[in-house]
Length: 260
Image 1: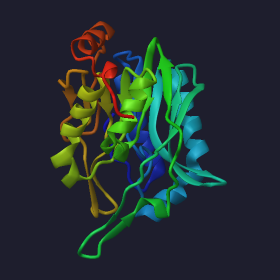
Image 2 (image 1 turned 180 degrees about the vertical axis):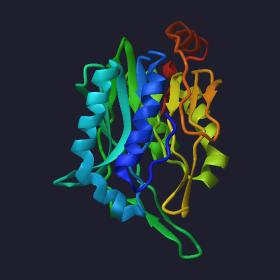
Image 3 (image 1 turned 45 degrees about the vertical axis):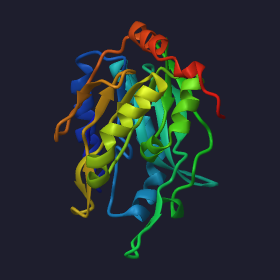
């Protein structure tokens, strides 16, 4: 799914859920949502504060998955725990049950020469668990946004059996134009896995931020199977396990790692 959440939680969810229902007409096995799919707000503090809604939103997504009879990989939401606020994915099975949960491991902290600072870790705590779940005979790995820049995580997921890796994201426009597609294709080629990256698009926070969009699915050879234009909606692809196994046999990097 490609979505543009704002600071009106109810309106954002209504638009997203209607788009999900339209995508469900094609009867997919899995629908994947972007990072922070429900709410972006007017800044990092309000985004972190939205963690108070985590349980309520997940109940709604669970009910939607059960109603549609389709599993939903719910991109991410802010999740408040006693130990901090986390950027967390919950995966809901076609019966509405929770089948996986993953919290973003890599947090984006930067200090630029002009004095600009952005510290995700000031408000969000890092997860520590690498997660792979199984759905309809496929093993699926979990990542979120900035995790994309760390190939060792994708290698770990591949070594845990992942055949598809999800990358829900809210990449900014500047870095998206330069790095988004090339990084996604590289992770697919390195690991011999399918990669699916549902993304946010358009502006948020009264135009102060702008997401790149271009939700993308690529195969283990690095071919782009689907790439969204600048719209709200979705792209889809059918995965082929025989093809995946053939690619891994032709370029068996998983057998040749010598560094740990």
